[in-house]
Length: 348
Image (tube, rainbow, N blue to C red):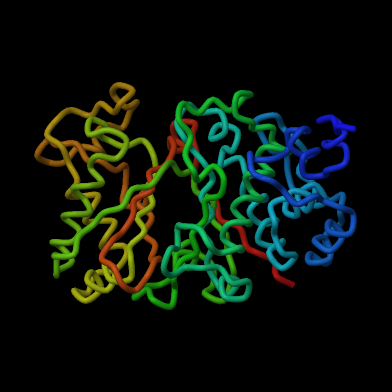
């Protein structure tokens, strides 16, 4: 006798989870009690009913157990769970504005930036293909944050999520800084943490694009190429840019810049001062509100970036290849948008 579709679903936990609408469009791992308990055991001292925070846009209560369920579904190993918990703490931080990032027409997603010893402890990839596929820790930690945003925060496409286009980072969006290949201090140290700390920073990012320069052999020449490309972020007309920006330098590009004695701060300052346009401040949504003077140079040109601090510089990627990437952000917190939020990862 033929099997009906309903009988197949009832007998197949993966299909049942699809039917319940708790997946991101890909199959998820069924969150059995045994799997969830193993995940919870990786965070000793955290009660399963402990409230991490309230997560928009639908103000769901993110408890440790609910987060563990989503981490299981994402395919995380238990040793990844402390990273996911810290990421959810950042998601629930009002400064990150997860609810706004989830309902904007722009294609935004939480980019998780990972620093510190946890990278090597759990096998995060920060080298070749650092922003790509193929590594379980990278893929599933970012995916867990997406599932939490959907299943606890209620941010589902064709529901409250109205991104005009979307982008693949809405499945999983994570980069681990390649601290061993960087000539500079790690990003989390710039954020005020100790080098020995493990830290996750969430950045409200949109889609990224690559910058190719195999020819420039000085810091200024290379950054001129990078800056010229960054001048078109979002729109060639958007001066000033109303968001933060992440610049991921490949190790080869970072080495070229550092060889001339430039620091990360020098990179941000140079881009802030030199990426300008000879036009009045306007932005894609019209003239910016207030404080126009800080975006205008002495010669009357308009800067692309709000401040040097709004340009986040990381080092990641393979040691072969003179390519870097730019990840524009969503609207900044000062315009009711998002600010990067860093949280300590509690490993013990």
